[in-house]
Length: 262
Image (cartoon, rainbow, N blue to C red; front, side):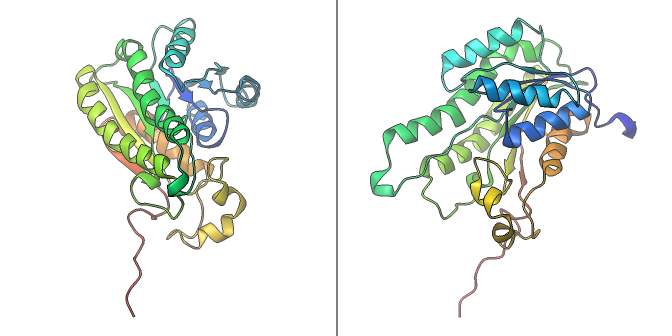
């Protein structure tokens, strides 16, 4: 029983924002466990290049789309359904950040982040709902994995107001979606990454040694930390995880000891 617990053989996955960073880590992990993986990203050349690179680990298909709008979500869904009739695993990873001082924080920056990080996550899942539930059963549920952030659990020092609010919203939205979609034998869960080297987290990318000093585990996240968590949730091993968001952050959110007086 344990031998195949983490296998994704025969499953089809779609990872948004899959051309780099956390999305790419997850896509590779799925491929190495036997899944067929579709990745999507806004920039077609980057998406195509990553898919080509990931072919070394399994079948990876590039579907470049901009999912920042509802129409974009529908276009991606139509494109995906031209290749597959069903979907086993959806990873809502595409995201954006925006930082400005409080007094200058712009509506455009606010809307860009909220639309992609929260609104599109919901409407892409809605668009793919039929494909997800087609083959989902109590014994083999479909999976939706929403990528939140440790910044949705605790605040950071930067003035990234809409980003931090959006990731807190993702965590709560994950719970609400899970309550509905479990009726269709679809398990919705989330991951809240901490410091992983990526274009989104340039502090971890460019200053890993300094960032590591404030992480209880004394290091930034590795690709395998993210891939392993996603594989757990996507596979039979995670079939009983419904609505929870796992902090994968080396202890920052839940194991950091606050400062003392004096």
